[in-house]
Structures are given as structure tokens and as C-alpha cells.
Length: 264
Image (cartoon, rainbow, N blue to C red; front, top):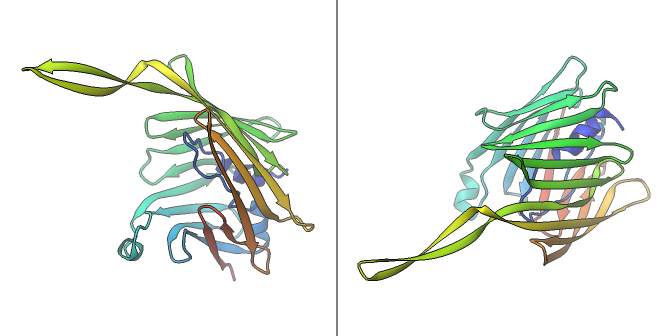
């Protein structure tokens, strides 16, 4: 597996503490490079709802991504605000070594082994720090978060073809929500609070059955998500492509649409 394609798979491995949709909405970097892609426009829910713009250099490396605020009506659709700008940095071997937001509070730092393959990364999201460990043959990624000496988040992603997510499973700890009553001047009040000394464990397991057509592209994903121990969500995703093989849309749950600009 090419290093660049491994990195793109890594971009799909951002920690998720809830049951949000995971769809394989990107293609290997080699697909973009071979088609001279300069920029990708991503639209969420509607082909008019701009969600993200991703820029590539002429060699096919990502250089910058801009995410925009969600739209709730025509007014917010026409007045988008920028939520984040990410910059991609590479070493002399053209390996991605970091992704840093423009404010500097969030970042991902990548480490490589002696064999040149991606070995680990550290992701900083505000005050939270996640550690990713990468495994090969087959490719998978395990993400953990520690609080003092306790693992409060641990999830693993497994892949089809070393790129497309096929399973996302693990657990996380959350403080139990408790209540206490107090009486002041004869009036009784109930106050809710999170008890960080009493943590509750939640298990998540999302399985994704991916179907590919005879020429290779992903055409369908069947998802069964068990989250927060016993809650279940099931849905299907369908992938459509332009004639040049680039992804056009992902439909079936939260729809995404894609448009492209090309280098001359």
C-alpha cells in the first residue's frame, strides 16, 4: 500500500465519541493525482450546501482544507461562515508529517518507522489528546485517549482494501449523571451534575459491509451501528461516480455531493 493512500485512510480515523455516520466519502490520493484534481468542493445534504473545500498541489498532495458552517435555511446557506482551516505539511520525502488548523489549537502529528510506513500519530483537539497506533497486514488503526492513568476512549477501525472502513468498534467512559436535592429557605431544588469519580462504560460497534463493482469502485455500504451498549441504527449508502471515475455523491443517510476543479 502506498504511503500517501495510507495517510488518506488515516484522515478517516478521527475520534468519534458518538454514533455519527461513517461513510467512505474519499478516494485514494492516487485517484485524485491521476486525474489532475486541483480542488474538491463538498456539499452536505444538498448540492447547494457547501460544506468543505479541499485543495491539492500538482503532485496530488492535499495542501489545505476549509470547512464551512452548517446550513439550516436559505439565509444561512447564502451566508456561510468558515469554521476551520487546516494546513497540510510534508517532509522532504513527501510524507505527511502534520495537519494544523489556522488557529493552532488543533493538530495531528505523524510518526514513521524505519521501514518508512506510518507508525503512530498524536491528535490534539482542544484540551483532548488522542493517540493513534497503525497496524498492517491487514491495515487497522487503534485510537486511545487517557485521563491520568485510565483509558477513557479506545476504538479500532478495520478496512477493506487497506482503505475503506469496514468496522469501527470499541468503548469510551463517561461520567454518570447524578442528582442531589437541597433545601434553601424551605424551597427544595434538584441539581444535576456529572460525577467524574464514577464513570460509566459505553460500547460501540459499527459494521460496514462494502460492495464493490467488477472494476473496483465502491458502490454500496450496508451499515449496522450498535452504540451506547444497546441502541441500534441501520442504514445503507450508495455511491455514484462521474465518467472519469471520481466520486459524485454518497446518498442514503446524510447525503454528500462532490464537484472538482482540475490542473491545466
